[in-house]
Length: 437
Image 1 (cartoon, rainbow, N blue to C red):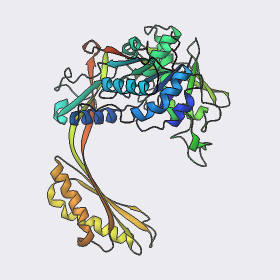
Image 2 (spheres, rainbow, N blue to C red):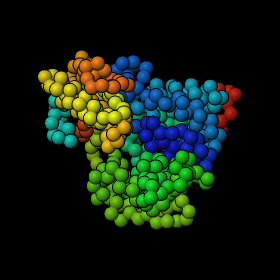
Image 3 (cartoon, rainbow, N blue to C red):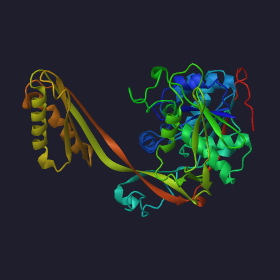
């Protein structure tokens, strides 16, 4: 089977996914969710119960779904974020508007806010969760087992599913692998880990001019994996796309976010990278294999969001002779004026600090418990116009609430999931059914 990666983070580009969809992929996975992303989704949903899903979902799907459905590629994504059911409804609307027909499956159950123990310790520091601040979200990392029942659909929407698990489920389904088969699940998890960040394995976040050159970065293509029956896989990208698939790009992604290469914990398997190999298999082709594993853990990781206060971020620019000195003086002035507030204030001078005729910008940032205190910081920066050094201009201020993130564990048995199927009953649809199994 061939499985592709159509997004690696919430703000990813859609053009490479549209290019990849007709490149013979059976499944196209868009991984758009991180710890901060889902917490921000929960924050949006608190303000408006109709929000919480990925704000780019409609824009992405209006361009991608007509191409993917026509090519027979099933689309799987965690753009449901904090509101998967609403994301499913929007997806159904997009498909109907485009004259497509089929099924949208929505996986829910990752939201465990009502089951998490506020007195339990955070994994990062051992401090009880509730002591970090008011808990506003708790989302468990679901695994491939929860996703399997949703795969009898043309588009699959989830909330928090572990990144590699988004790939493990369709690989296991199409290859006929049992998730209790640890070697097979380890192999599928390795593929998912390599593909989950999309452009990072084709040269994005890798390029370093003169050290690690990447051709055609402006037209960066996204990767796919051809998965073999023995669990090995070959990583590639569409012909004519920019970027590169090399042993170097693959190795960097193999190490990405892996704290312990002997025991990388996922909901599906504890992955051991020590015997993993990446070998060139042709132009823009790298073969990977050698993953080992141990049985899946009995606890699931939970991403817990809490109210961490408000952040003020402000700036003012200085240009011309003495710009750096005037910006430094402004930093000293505003820091002194805020000294009595008890806030931790950071002031940095950025720009052409070594150029006597250059332009510099003072950036001031601070955290406060409430919006009013944060606004004080912005007011003092704005007052530098006429109460600070000469020639200041271009003041910009921003205050926003911050949702902090810590992690916890929850017994797997305490998490229950559900799949909701939404039909797109447009009788004039142009789409065709996808191959199964």
